[in-house]
Amino acid sequence: MYSLDEFGEMVADELRFPRYREAIELAVRPGDSVVDIGSGPGVFALLACKAGARKVYAIDTESVVEFGRQFSATNGMSDRIEFLRGDSRHILLPERVNVIISDIRGALPLFGQGIHALNDARTRFLAEGGRMIPEHDTLYAALIEAPETYERILVPWKSVSGINLEAAIPVVLNTMYKRSCKPEQLLSDGLEWHELNYLSAAEARAGKLLRFKIRRSGTAHGFTVWFKAKLFGEIGFTTEPGTKESVYGQVFLPLLSPVEVSEGEEIRVGLHADLVGTDYVWRWEFETPARNDRAAQHFRQSTFQGGGMTPAALRKRSAEFVPVLSEAGLAERWLLLSMDGMTSLEQIAIKATENFPHTFSRVEDAFRRAGEIADRYSR
Image (cartoon, rainbow, N blue to C red; front, side, top):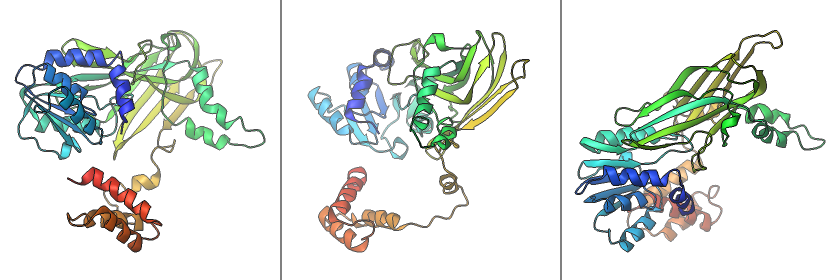
């Protein structure tokens, strides 16, 4: 998911990394066992060892864990850190741990299967009385005035002379964006939208009706969403507008058209995020009352309309769907079954090209795909 360079940005993040380091130093006690979920190259695992951990299990789905093995050897910690590649939900540990460390968020904590992974880890890995980093995340939302951000979204679809591309505009306005905003852009106070308590059963599905009171007159272009993290005890950070630039930032949800709002006016907003398969579908509903100088406004928007989840994709994830493998799917299954512990990748690739010529037109293509599968699933 992330490259080593991107993990480097996380380590260099002045908002995120010092707070995590402080939390690990406080939460991990001499003799503790620890699991680091989404460990990447294992920097948090190394910090846990420095704090006195007896054993650390560092888990990540990507091959970047190989750098973790190098780092642990360089730092003389190879005997205390065990790197495991795979989905934490499919891994068994030989013991329950005292501390779970993770940062498997995106711009927001509602990211992929992250909440489910942490709920599973708490249930299966954490010892009674164990500790988690983070303990709690709270998400907030506010109405914002963002003319430049809004125009940057629209201008590509209006700027090609002699060609009408405006059919794209409803799609791009039903899309969520990672965009930073400044405190002076807020038209309302930030309202608490969703809580995630990782020490109990965190709810992956988020939804709430919010009533924003406009604190200054202006033009509403959309919503900004951010979070506040409680890592351990009093240690934490916030990504609210005006904080340091970080790997998180804020999320921008645009309106279908800008709306003039007045100080003291109340705006009703429904904001929802639903996990469908491995991705979130976001929905936002914006409603203003009629005024003398403005008709009532009512927008219903969703990333589903923005192409984030097509009807065909939803159909294939329904309980009633009966799947039939395509040729590409048959080729993938054949490659997996061919990895029998006796056949080389070269032999597999040659045979795959013969069996599935429409999927693999060259031996090199089959070899590349076989290598990717072997990297992920082989021992």
